[in-house]
Length: 465
Ligand code: MG
Image (cartoon, rainbow, N blue to C red; front, side, top):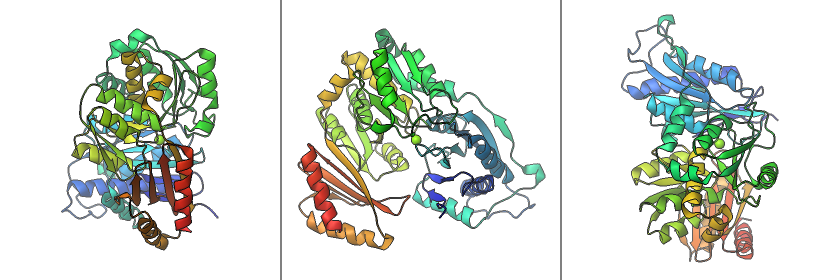
């Protein structure tokens, strides 16, 4: 059976040629454009075809990762936007954070990234951003979904169609914003040797330029933006062996692995050992908190390492429901100086409200330069936990029942119910939540050692069954 098109808060995702076609992309463009027009002037109803529409012209930035289907879907989505009278700024092949930066710099009403992030090549997706550069919150995402499913499109007549202009400033603006928040001189003085794996995605071009600005000697692999991924594109331990080898072969100080839209960053230490994506945010937070006291925001599934680092620095951590938009909103609300998620996504609002592998790299290199310590040394100082991530199929009606059963059994834990349930114990934590995109529940457990983590997994699973 063909897989269904997935529509979630982060946009739409599907298999190209099966359920994700140019026709679908054009309709999604029409839906997003109509939503933006109505949001700017919500009192005015959707104008009928040919009727006098609003005079204010809105624009949307659109960019894509390197997938071979990207150009086709970008053109189709842009056509849909133009059909409802939205002007389109075509950024070409850029990273996801790059699109967010340009949305706010160009004062656009929204942004579109054609990407399926870390999903395999047969997938592509249409990720949406609002005018603040952040993915829409749940209620607004639901409104966009309704415009799409009901095909309620505010089509305009021939004279009012949107126009497409090209803009190639994204890399330059992105690099300038990252350089503005770090100490370039201190990093450059170290002349770090960096191995980079951009999985033939959108990250290589801009990242190589940034690392050159930081005085690094870069050995890049998989740096052709062909979209033909050299390995499964999620930057997890099993997928980046070649980068680990490259670090050793080259005697590099550090290895960086990006996903295709370059919002996630995984790190390999100077011995060629993959240290896990959870350390990316932890190291970035350590760098930020070494200069300034403040707050961090992260989701409930992210490692406790960030609390340890914050506590040592006299800082505070805000925990929030899973999802980049939730983290960004919490950062704005609580005036956080750093944020992100345990999947290697670091956010600094001075650059953009989107997870950004370039920001992550810059902070980690700065921490290495300022402390004079190797990456393995910094990791051993932070210490670590043992994390297990699991998922299991569940009927949608059973979620509450399962959560209640686990809540009753873990009555002595500190409970957070913002997103499923997170149970905090002295020696670890358990997070159980329904997925936003699949009919599954996710179970994440972290403890000081493997046997304890395993014990929590067995205990929780027994309760579920
Ligand atoms: Mg991604």
